[in-house]
Image (cartoon, rainbow, N blue to C red; front, side, top):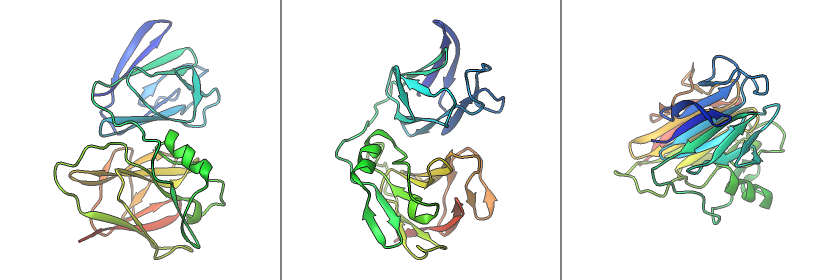
Amino acid sequence: MAKLILSMDGLVLKEISLEQERITIGRKPHNDIQIDNLAISGEHAAVVTILNDSFLEDLNSTNGTLVNGQPVKKHFLRHNDVIELGKYKLKYLNDQPQAGYNPDYEKTMVLRPGGIKPAAQEAVQAVAASPLGPPSQAPAGIGSSISSIGPLSQAAPAAPVSTAVIQILNGANAGKELPLTKTLTSLGKPGVQVAVIARRPNGYFITHVEGASYPVLNGATLDAQAHPLKDHDVIEISGVKMEFFLKT
């Protein structure tokens, strides 16, 4: 199991197993990893773990987040990566095989009012560096909010999973469908609210990734944990309602 080793000035302070799909790091007490230091923002960063892969996201912190000495916004974590937050360091350890990123990933597909079109080349480059895909510069709305990304893991599922689809229920794109063919699909508006749907051997699961507001599932607000999806579940993210259903 992957874990983080928290240290300062070479002194190990804590070991954190990445058992949850999403953990937050920050100065405020509600964070999973609380670092009580003024150099750390109230909600500084988050680590999302899907299967054997984890990725780090800076939550618009004041002083930024470094990985191996380089500033990052989103970063796929590899064994022995060192996350730096002020004087504190978090070493990422993972003895399980990781798929890593393939530079030949398909282009990000963005749902727009005129249909489904490939995003710009900048978006393609952003996907190679970020599991959540590129931040959108488009105005708020469904046209800027849904993207499908390449798989985080190449491992074949132990048992076949039915093909699933997300269908938009409101707005200009009502009726349009997004097939969930990837291992991980991100939904939402970067910087506002983002969730991911993971395709696992035992079904599909939705997990909150970014934003103060959590996704709504069948009228109930979710928490930070992964939640299984059932046929005809209704999801609401960033004001957009969509239906999850299985295709036979």
